[in-house]
Amino acid sequence: MIRIGANPIGWSNDDLQHIGGATPLETCLAEAREAGFEGMELGHKFPREAGALKAALAPWGMACISGWYSAELLRRDAAEEMRHLRPHLDLLKAMGANVLVFAETSNAIHGNRAVPLSQRPRLGAGEWAQWGKRLTALAEMTLREGVRLVYHHHMGTIVEDAADIAALMAHTGDAVHLLLDTGHATWGGADPAELARTYRHRISHVHAKDVRRDVMERARREDWSFLDAILGPGAELGVYTVPGDGMVDYEAVFRALPGYSGWVVVEAEQDPEKAHPLTYAKKGVAHLRACLKAAGLA
Image 1 (spheres, rainbow, N blue to C red):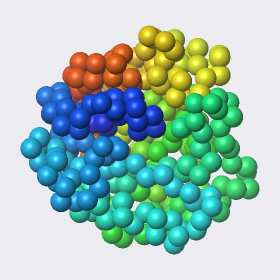
Image 2 (image 1 turned 90 degrees about the vertical axis):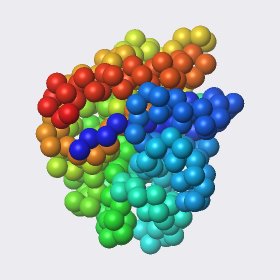
Image 3 (image 1 turned 60 degrees about the vertical axis):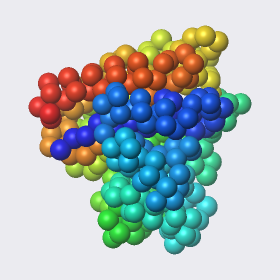
């Protein structure tokens, strides 16, 4: 069964918290429910105690899907990382979430507007094995507790393009699954449908955001930072938008995921002052439903 959920980043940005900072959590949840979402990933405005989080989500009938975790496995081993992860993992377990959105951020630049994406970190050929071993060990730990680690490839990090994703998958065991993010894949130069076909058996979570081709090409040409591209210059819209408003072929992506069961999460990271969250959310849900039906998944 496929369920359509949302990340609150279309209402309130997590990296730049003043973007959408005045929007109450209740507004985000009410509009997400109106748009047709069944669950939400966590953002910085959500309570991080299970009772309070359940109370916040319950009036809107929303499930807790998962939540981003910023890892530092390049600097610490799996056991130490688990100590840092423990409160977040326990919260997800208490909320009934079965996937953990996970990314290496110890040397990431996506949160720094002063650093262009051309300066993003990379692992050398000899560094993947140790990092992959640590990641696998941690994923095995979380899986024993009923939560699957899904790795979020992301612009401005060590896992950004198709070659990085291939290295990630080659140097990790089956406990590590992939979070297929259509927007990050496209901007990173990969074909999300091809990634879906190649790694279908290890994809357990999907983030659905579309890409404005003209903004992406300008960001590459002028070497913008991640956040500058997300927000867009002046009154212009940014690089990401909701499914159906950009260049991603979602029907092709879903056709490459036969038998997929889980969440498809709209994560359209935009400035809410430029892109009205509810309007865009409704558009994204409608497009996803149509594409899932066309691909035989709904």
